[in-house]
Image 1 (cartoon, helix red, strand yellow):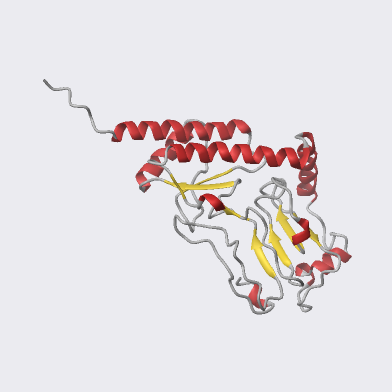
Image 2 (spheres, helix red, strand yellow; image 1 turned 90 degrees about the vertical axis):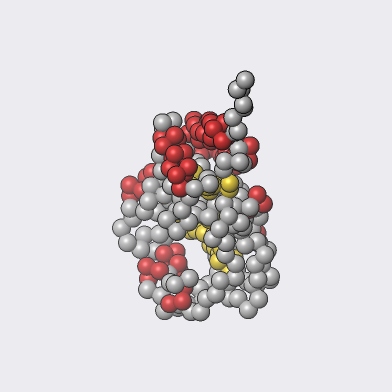
Length: 263
């Protein structure tokens, strides 16, 4: 939003709430808009559009799909421009994949060349020296995706893995609470919390014993977050499920009222 204002006026049509009732902004308004920009899966809030919103005729939809690109099919008939940075599902940082309609023309003509998609298109993505290492890793990741069965297989894998984690969280709802509403849960960024910071710290320490690291939530949201990007192995997902189940069971047992066995 801050940088968008440098090229014209902008406004927020919808945004996830900052607390436990986060929901993807699926009821968007495009009235009076030159274009609408969304983030298909919000990494910090843990929300995701189950389907992309349908814009009225003539209003382009721009999608930041960095978090869920190559984890599900894209509704290309709704999209005018889609971009995805490489450091989540495409490899290492340094590359951005951009897909845009050929008939799409930018409204702002005064942008510097490095920020102009037309300039990048005319230069065939070589406006300056490419980061060859990151491009090579991207190639390797795409080959790996094909070896996994392609996009359809990766989408099913993402659904199964997310369901495993959410089922564990819901089963132990007395201990864990999701930050996103069930109808807006992200499959790749799972955010949750416990009753207090002490319990969250205890859980992260317990998870660390199972080889899980980096579960702290995004700095603006806090709490806990588990990212299930494509490169995360299935064993890591199962370790997270085990951590949730064992910690939830142990905490529930410790909180249960003690049975009076005195005589």
